[in-house]
Structures are given as C-alpha cells and as structure tokens.
Length: 547
Image (tube, rainbow, N blue to C red; front, side):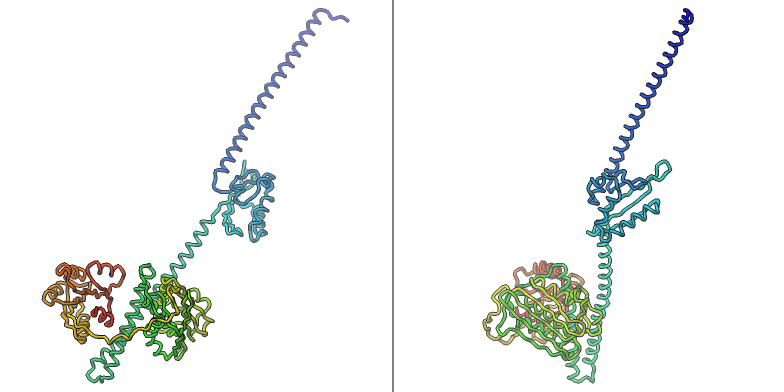
C-alpha cells in the first residue's frame, strides 16, 4: 500500500523529531562528559597541589616524618626521616612500613624490644604516644606518634622523630656538673670545718704553754718546754697557712718556680727536718736510701723539699705508731725517681683515683690521721706538675701501706759527683738600726724583743704617721712595715720614705698577713725590697738583715 502524501509527511516529521531528540541527548551527554572531564582534571590538579604542599611541609620540618595508613602502608615521608634512620629510598618506595622498621631495628642493641613497642602502638591505637629511643651508637631520638583522622575515621598514624642527642647529652653533663658542684661544696664545707679545727688545735697548747711560762712556780725546764711547745705550734700554723696560699697559687696558675741547680740529698734533708716532729712523735722508723753519688739537677729546691715533706708528713699521719717509712731514689740520664713508702693504713682501690683531689681526706682512714686540711697531696701534685714531672699513688689495699712515686725530668748533668764545697763559716750578726711599724702592739713588741736579743737597735711605731715621724729622727738601716696600719698604710709609708730619701740604702721589708702574688707585686711597686708573711720566721728575717 502506497502512503499518501499526508502520511509520508507525518513520517518525515516524526523521523526528524526523533533525530533531533537523539542529537540533543548526544550533545547533552557530550557536555556532561566534558564537565566531568574538567572536574576530574581540576580535582587531579588540586590533589597534585595538595600532595606537593604536603611534601613541601614534610620536607620543611626539622623532624623526621613518616605517615602510614590503616593498613600500615607508608603514604608519605620526608628526606630527614630516611637520613635519620639511614633507610634506602627504595625501601621506603615499597610503601611497606615493616621493611623500613626492620632497617631501624638493626640500629638498637635490643631490636626485638623496639619492634615490640611499634606493634604495641599499632595494636592499641593510642591517640598519642611519646617514646625516648637510645640507639646503639649513642644517638637519642624522641618519637611522637599520633592518629591521623580523616572525615572522622582513623586513617592511619603520623610518626615524628626528633634528634635530641645533644640535648640529652647536655642534660647528662649538666647533671654530672651539678653532682660535682654539690660534691665540691660538700668538701669545701668539710674543709672549712677542718680548717677551723686545725687552727684551734695549736691554740690550746700555745695558751697552756704561755700560762706555764709565766707561772711563778714554773721551773726553768718547764719554761724551756713551754717555749718549745709554742715554737712548734706556731711553726705548724705557719705551714698550714703557707699550704693554703700555695695551693691557691697553683690552682690559679700564679705560682712561679725559682729553678736552680739543686742537690737531691739537701732537699731530702730539708723535707725530713720539716716532717721530723710528727715522725718522732709517733715513733716511726725512717730509712733513707739515696744514690751514693751526689745527684744534681735543675729544680726549685724549696718546692722540691715541700713536695717531699708533704709526702713524708702524709705517710706519718696515716701510719700507726712505730711504723715504717722509707724514702728512696734512683736516677738515670733523663729522669729522677723518688719513692716514699709506708706501712700505714693503705688506700682502698676505689679511693686511689681521687687521692690527689683538692680537700680530699679519705674517710675510712680519718681515725688514723693526725688532722690536716686535705690539700697536701693536691699541692704536691701541682708542684710536681709545675716541674714537668708526674706523681702517682699505689697501695695493695687497706692495711697494706702506701707508696708515692715522684718522677722529675733531669735537665742538667745528673748523678754526677758534686763539687765539694768548703764548710760555711760560722754565722756572724751585723748590728742594724731597725724601725718596726705595726698597729698590733704584741706583734711589734715581741719582734722588737727578738731583734734586741740579737744586738739590733730597735724603734717602734704603731701607726703610719708615727712611723714617718720616727723615721726622720731614728735614721734606721731597715724598716719593717705592717701594711694595714691606721693613719697611713704600709704602701704609703714606703712610698713617702723612698721619696724623702731618694738613693738612700734603706731596706724596706713588708711584714703582713697578705701573701698573694698580687700583694707582693703591689709591695714591690710601692718601694719595698722584700715581702714576708706573718708569722715571720726569725731565721728568714735574720738572713734579710744580713744582706
């Protein structure tokens, strides 16, 4: 059947409408696809930007960072993390946190404990955790772990590692310093208490001897005995104060040695003379074994004798009565070795390393000692070091005695026969006119009495103004000036004397309780010729008067 024109027209219209509809739907679909594509590209760009920003953030931090998801896979990390743990990047690239942890674990002395702690954190999922990690090579890391929450769900963890090695080591050093400071303070407190005790000790026999000396019923023998006691105790106090000044100078590096040719036997004799009262008081047997040939070398003879006397005194103190003390020496072309051994209480192994510490008095042996400030061995070590030598202590333990060994370099021909010298002629006393200026009347009067006994003519003044007035009329050869006087101090008096009599041969001697190197320098700058610290050794003063 042939469609008429109307039907054909209708069919064409329907076909066109269907085609138009299909075309519109296709166009809408294409537009939708393009929109989806644009959205996807935009989202991809945003994600790429976020990832880049996140990575930049990770790299900008000072901590090592690694991020893991809920399946324990690595979703991010920074270069700092790989360097801190020395993890190859290919291991991190696998994304397997377990492989990275295996590399970390190898750096601990107990890898299993490290991995067990990681497993504990994963299993219990604490919101936050903080651990301090000490690696086998001494590095110290602080690890902070926190849950990463995205859209309200647990999306894994962020692990932050911070290197706190320097901080922790610094804290440890600070703690050690604090402990050392507290120990030093404790020992200083003990030292001050001991110093007060040691200074009081001589005062009792001095006071008692003085009372005996002036007692009407005292016999001549008792008076002589009291004088000996006073002399001995004053000598002890003088040595005590000298040690205090010397250890201060050694500690501050201001003590200067007076190096000169020195004979070993002479230095040993002086040391024994100093320590003899204590050795004899405890009835010790002292043996001396020196080379048969005289030993000469370069040293400060006074300081060498001081080293040896301190060691001998120490041996006498820490040895029970009727003990054995031995001093011996040997010498080769390069080194002089001196040993002082005793049969005393000995030194425990735990105390040997600190035997030369300042203020050191070893408590296990305190009951056996005869007091002291605990600075004798420290001073001996300092003086030996100034000579370029070494000193060491050795003991088989408590109850087995001790031995101290001093080794000194030999700087001139040693172990050689010393040239024999003629015996010194008998000492003669040159009579001097001496002016003493001291505001301490007892000190001035007793010193004047000693000088008058030796035949000197003496005048006394008790302040600076009186000293200057007396000087003009008395015309002394020697002026002994205390420093801390009223009216005008010793420095001012010395300067005015020098200005009033320029070129005159007047010997000015400072006699003072101030004995630091700076005090001596100030005295010499003011015009003094010599500087003596109180109490003055009469033999030393007489030697200066003879010059």
